[in-house]
Image (cartoon, rainbow, N blue to C red; front, side, top):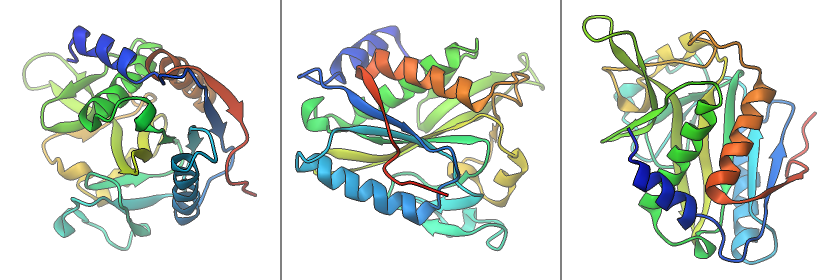
Length: 243
């Protein structure tokens, strides 16, 4: 479980030194993956050049797989099941689709501390805080990026399932890509890959845990927790209009 001292450290470290707010945008219709990536990259460049404020962009994708820079070909078990996209983010293979909240995080680490490991830890703290709004205990594990929950009691029924994935990229110290939180996706869609290269653990979602959480409720929990870790936000229009 994340150490309390680390939690407090990341909350302080990743607030902007100038106190500027982060734009918070939510797309209400599915966004095509390549369109989202192109929009993210353009926004990250504008942030680096001082032409745009930081942004967190919440959206859903159509069902698809993405392969991060560490992806192994053998972890793609069903290549024809959904479209597969190469991604410049860190990590291995993951699934995105309806019922999963993707949050693309475009932050300028020049104003927050140029510490990549602490930034990833701050993302984990953010997700863990959001989960706590639903009385879910999210945890991190050494050597396994992302956020996990324990299932069952000690013994044969005990297991750990992944509820949120993290994969980011930095360019000129501006981040893009981000996190994905399983709210109510079709978990069978993960069967076409070895998620994040981990074979000995499964995946879960808030609804799979018996919590009938709506996407809007998950968004509010993410927003509240983000404020406590990274600073204030202001609502904004999505950077890409859909449908």
